[in-house]
Figure 1 (cartoon, one colour):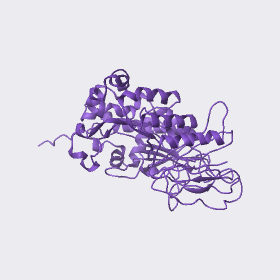
Figure 2: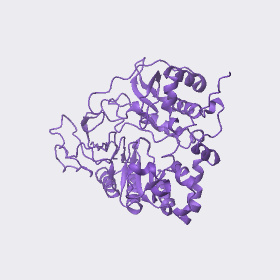
Figure 3: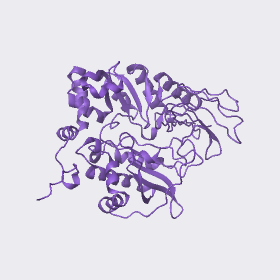
Figure 4: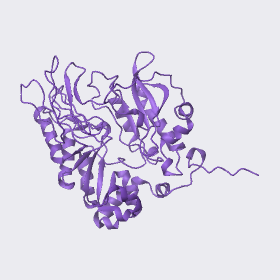
Length: 460
């Protein structure tokens, strides 16, 4: 008796193109990015009740929009209710911020949007995004216009696409980093975002690129991670990990055992993403993450497919990163910079902040580090549940005379008076973001880091 034919898993590379679930059907019928035109020219005029359900619960995510849960409905009951019974007529909008880096002008724009359209609420997310709440569909075109005027967007902040790329909040600053991964992150973002090859992946896809000595971006739980190491010839580069993820069926990523030079990161990242696109499981959404493919294949086969089918070249073997340091893998507290100065990391509460506070941070940057022509202050956020950061100067020589006071807070840390020998700061809460301010060209730079919340880092 012949054995029954095994059902395909929706892998394009094996010829399984037929849509196998509702999400794959709507992506085939009309790609997610196409909904922008309908938002601008139809839904913003006709209102929430006119939105097609498939656009509302599917394609809107490609533009960073989710419906909010109606007040009074606890999260535990959502599985037993229909979507229409749960949804409120407001949206959460997520803004994509690669590496969490923002100029003061961009930060001030986010603050204004929060205050004008989002009831003065702003969240800093696990993945270095900023989220607004209480957004009406009628206001989305105006919000997009304001974001795009300063080089920001909600494009591909959600959906089955490469999500925002995580980076170390003190890249290029921290004395203990292996290498500054900022250039590799920017180059990879240019390949990942709005690439027509990657706008229809099996599921969401999360990347981290960091040379951080404390491994603050948690490479073990990303779909693909580039981890700073010293290569076989003594030059810094990256160790490649794939297949990590949390949520249901949490799995740690696996090392492929290759050494990736910084200039190779965009191509290698694109290769891993292409494997996910072509071989990822599309039949069932609950098995469509890269971690399931890596678990089935193993690291050796994944590396072979990457090198032979996508890169067309072998990558050299490379060393594993050292074990992460004991304790918290973050930048909260007082830490030495590469230039001998210090930065201070502070953790506010749970990532929740406000437009009012964001505007104060931007104003503080411009007041303490005015930049000619354009304000080049910057800030970075991180995971998980990061929050906002405010500027506190560090010591220019020697060791700090005192450590910051520990105080749980969701507001900006206070800047000490001129001449003060130590900063006053807020310390660890549930979340952590970090920020730093650098004065090399009379500009400030903001950074946020990972751990559940936010942190501030400031230097002079």
